[in-house]
Image (cartoon, rainbow over all chains, first blue to last red; front, top):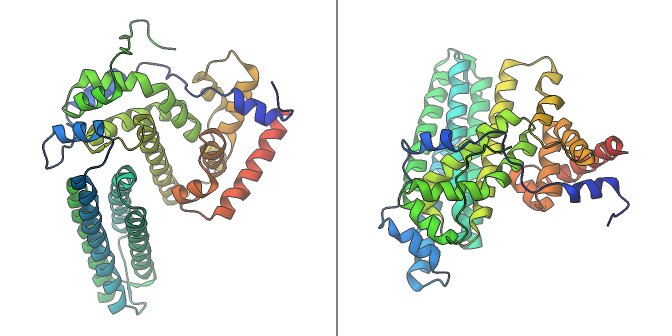
Length: 188
Length: 189
């Protein structure tokens, strides 16, 4: 049965699954040995048990709340630290002489942020909607702060002490975020 | 096309059992999960990135990441949905990284980024001409429009969800959708 719209008809005919041209499993399996599943601090069997039990118990309702509070606090702390840095150094000061290093830092931040996002995306379904929104808002605040810091760095004069100071702060902010991300991933 | 000697699926095994076993480090159980979901995840990656070689790399990365994070999967959604979301995030992250690289390298030839239609055809079954036309036309869309179109029209995400995933305004999503549909209708006419 057609709708009369060629695009709609073609979309309806698209296959949901397209097999890869070759079997990808051997390549995947080779990578699994080096990357064991990341068990949580609790007993490894917990996830399977939780998975099987659809009805949430009291303990399960409390756990996401604690995690959400912790993660929110962590993200907020990271964001606050970066905002504080920006707040105390608003003058368009010195410059960054090492663009590559700056871009490398940006990539590091993007990678850390992507890790946090994956964890949040995978865990948000177990959190209250408000907690999830707070976490996403915290991440966006962090993005804005890092972007502002980078912008200040770009506008700064090359070789100035302010430029070096900004670069140091950016490195610390990224390192701090990386540390928090590691803790969040372990706890979540 | 799948290789001839493929381990058979065991339909009797419940997905919850497979997840539990794989979470404990059972690679055979994880292989069953892989076999059940790989076609769907591959289709997603292929349509989102428009490059068969890259799509296969992304599929591998998605399943390796799924293996690492499987103990965190608690079953509030289906495993397929969880894998799907993980793969979407992975592809979007890859595209952002590629865009950053392109900006740094100041690519002067915008067509250099477009996927080869012949290459895309190599990743698809050519039994249905119209369907292949659409697959190729989707792959030839600009990156931004293609991702938005695939997520909304093929994968069923709402405009708001696409907007959140891509961190762009809903108006931008609607505009890109309009342009993508118009272009695809021209191709299919």
